[in-house]
Each structure stands twice: as C-alpha cells, then as structure tokens.
Image 1 (cartoon, helix red, strand yellow):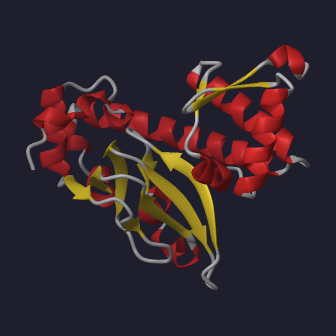
Image 2: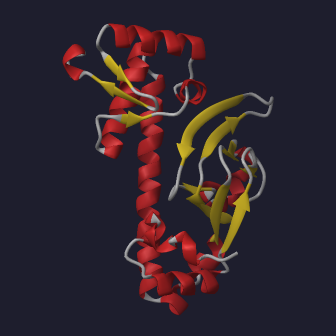
Length: 226
C-alpha cells in the first residue's frame, strides 16, 4: 500500500516524529498498514492478538461481548485512536478479554507488533523514545475515557446521562457544539432505548435545554444550572 498520502506523522502516536523517522520506524518494527471494509471485526474478543492498532482513516466501535453472545457498545474510535493494546501487552489475560473492534466505515489501520516495538530502541534511538512517550499518554487517555463511561452509566435518568455525555465531550473537544452520531449509534453509546432517546431530545429542545443541529447538539447551560 502507498503510505505517503496518509500523513502518518500527524497521528498522536507519532507526535514530534518526522515523516522520515516514521518511515524508518515502520521498517524497523515490521509495522503493517491494512484496509478494512465497513462492518469488519478487525479484533475479536477472546482471540490472540500481538499488535497495537492505530486508526489511520475511518471509524470503528468498541464492543464488549460475553460468552453468551450478549453485546454492549462502547466508545467510537476515530483517526489516531488506539486498539488492541491490552491483548498485545498482556497475552496471558487474553482468554478473559471480552473486547471486539468493528469498523463503522471503510477503514485503514496501522498495526505495530508489540514485541518488535520493545526491542527497537537501539535501532531507532530518539524516535523510539518519542513513540513510547506518546504510547503512554494514549494509555492514560484511555483510562480517562473508561472512567467517564462508568460515570455516565451511573446516572439515574436518561436526561442526566445525555447531559453528562455532552459535557464530557465538550471538555474533550473544547467545543460547546458537540458533534454526535446518528440516534441509533448515540443510543448504543449511552446504553438506552433509541425511541426514548429521541423523545428526550425533543423534550429538552422544547424546554430550551438543548439546541439541536443536523449532526450536533449544544447544551444551554443556563437552563440546567451549569
């Protein structure tokens, strides 16, 4: 695959790394880049995985599934998001790893072999240090998102859950106008009934609590005491 048009140096994993250094990193670690069609399970729960993945193009979603086939939709992964780190770094725990990743659109993913990354320091020098720093920062962000999800699902009402969802994303993207997925996907992300969510959004709009755009929502904080 031609990689030059992908601007890999702009990914968070390669922050402060030059395009030439990115190319050398890919060669030295045996990193691969793969295309996937929409609806593909690019990582499957309970199955071995030796690579840390990074979304280069497209979107995917995290799906938690138990051994009875029940699924729970997690957060959405976009450009720069990482996946597969737990199963790659902790293979002994993989039999208990219930996380799958499924593409929401056609996608391109960069796969970094974890074992190769560990031993690439002597060959890569400064580049290795920069990538490892960026990797640790990404792990910390992932923990923050997990805690946000726990807080979100602890809310007692659908309105409280939707308000917190929007406040979390305001903080994450530094914008009061929060871009949101379609109603089906949004209902999955906050784990509620789609019809109930649609009614709640309409009610909040009528009360002046919410301003609704084609693909965005904005809280009117003076109406909710924030």
